[in-house]
Length: 77
Image (cartoon, rainbow, N blue to C red; front, side, top):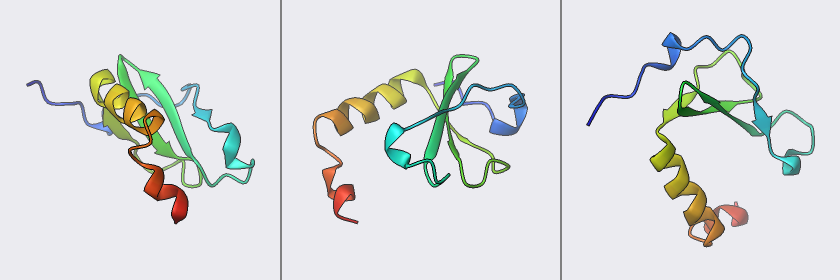
C-alpha cells in the first residue's frame, strides 16, 4: 500500500472546498475537497489546520456507510 501524502504538501490556496448545506452557515462544519485524486476533509472553523487526507476508496466506504445509517449514532450527540 502506498503511503498517503502529507497534507502540508498540497497547495490549498485555490481549493474549491464544499460545505454541507446543513451547516447553517455558521462555519462549524467540515469542508471537503478533492486534490490530486485524494479526498481532503478540513475544519471550516479552523481553515489553517491541515486537512485529513483520504483515498477515494476510504471516502467512498465512509459515505456509503453514512448513507446506510452506520453512523446515525452521531445524530444523537
